[in-house]
Image (cartoon, rainbow, N blue to C red; front, side, top):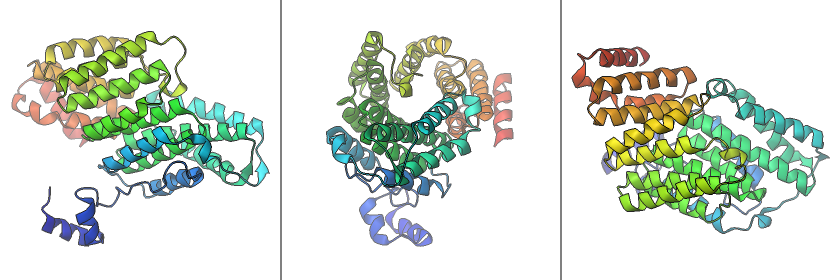
Length: 386
């Protein structure tokens, strides 16, 4: 971390007021970490949706996310505010139900495509988002139609947030997820809201902000009804607790995640339909890696990988990296390098730079073993991609 004097020099370069350096602290005064300023429950859902779109036009890679306190405050608002208070009137022409049905069907098709194909849908999703927000801005609609529009806006914003997250535009992703939470709150969809908070928590975990993730997930769990959704939230919480070295609390969260998933009888919400026993097994293994239990971790990860559907390539790239790390810690260098190589090729094929960066963090540990064939092939592929 730069010392205070050097931070002031950097602030001058970015034309940031010195007072912000002192009050916000490193690194949250840097450009690109501006927090959403619209609280839930103010009826300004459309404003929040447009604000996310405006921020995205900057199109910058932001390796830092929003300040952790931002997400905690947003989660606290979501957990305590009555969505009915956010209802607002709209003016303009009436929205045809057929139009909304077409938008819902088309958006559902885009968001359910295989991972390798979804990387090519970003502009289409942006167009659908712009259309839906435009309808909310200028059209007349019944309360039932308004709920459908807000749900669709939330779904699109959540998906676009993941696109931005995968390309390491972390601040933009945070703004889209914040907008998605506004729209879900307006639609009175608490399970969807909890899922969006889970996404924000996952980003916090990815960026090393485990405590912030726990705080967000604690709020999310207060209003979550669906067992599958509850399982996902408990699993994300276990990951954050493992990062903090809280072994006992982590195991409690893992047990809660397993119990909730095993008791699920109805179909889960659409946003959680991808989640299952493969994710539970692999992320449990990831927790064990963080807790230093590499043997059981490798068993869990291998078991989960066998259950993973073939269409989920992005998840497979992440899981392969976990497996490579576990093998590395077990001293299985060649096998680890081959697994990391497979993860790297897959991450490149699906165009997810955050997955590539995840693999990059392992590279220094292979350098002392360059005489091994699989290590040589991995390092050659990595350097060629750099």
